[in-house]
Length: 253
Image (cartoon, rainbow, N blue to C red; front, side, top):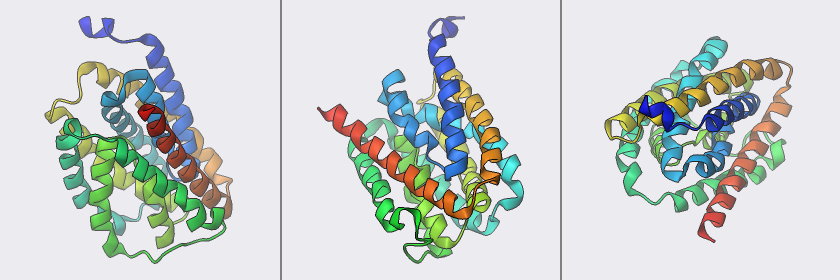
């Protein structure tokens, strides 16, 4: 078939391997694996294809994480989050091909780097007051930006941490919210023509790697203290932000 002639087998292997590593990291740090992949996939396949591939791959990897962490999901938070995330996802997919994403990545990156100081390098349990009622506008904004950029997981971590979620509860609730958001994202990408058969194959390989990473990550998480988990969360947020900013600076030079 013509579609398989267009696919680079090296990219398939690379996407599986980096997907495994990124989502193992994501499982022990509350997210960030997909965001770290943004510059990697940019280099491999180009910025215009990064967001659809990452969101498809992460969606395919989420069912395994949902099953693993099912009993820890805080459904009340999902009730506030999911409806507005669906709206933001559809709008983001509609705007995807029309917007310059560089300045968005820089803003998101700077916010993530700032979490190092917000949480005093992981020593503080909270940095601001968080309420359930804040989730609807947050869900809309994060899903909109995530659909445009391709990954926004770490930016939610300060809000979950400040609500008091820890380890399995944070990962489980965040995964449930992201799963429903991902369904809307991938459906909207397909509807607006941003996902072609070649990208589906690449996204599938990334999703298989993500599934393996989730399974491996669960084993590491069980042996980790809450304090260590919080430090991982904060440092991965900061590193993800730095990578986003650096990637944009390099593209502009």
